[in-house]
Image (cartoon, rainbow, N blue to C red):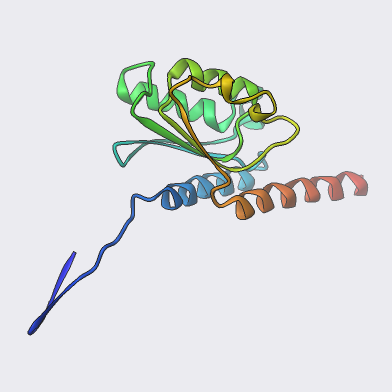
Amino acid sequence: MIFFVFPYIYRMNFTIFSDEHFMKLALQQAHLALEQDEIPVGAIVVCQNQIIARAFNRTEALQDVTAHAEILALTTATEYLGSKYLTDCTLYVTLEPCVMCAGALKWAQLDRLVFGASDEKEGFMRYGKELLHPQTKIEMGLLEEPCSQLLKDFFKSKRALSKLK
């Protein structure tokens, strides 16, 4: 973007297509899940700097254990592209994918995975990145604190509610 201010020209560079930008959008999806009393995980699929899919966990609403944000986003992305492969796509997700989701990412041949919070109990990295396609690049810990805090607060409130019952 160029601003003309006589007699000088100022050049300002804006990077809206950054990993942080897209992860913030995934966090918005996680907040939508929270509003619907779902585990607050959000996902965004990006292809050539264009968002082609957005999703959040819907396991409670759909009564479907496979309705994770990653799976729903992958389904939408493949429908959009008309292809089962996501070789030019990046998935931004607020929580490290589970083994089931990692398997789906492998079969989709995802180019790049970026996730926020780690999941030591259920995350795929517990078993190794070999669960993903060999060409998939991984970025971990982006906006880890807000992603992690959202989940901690959700489960803390769930525990508090269960004690009241």
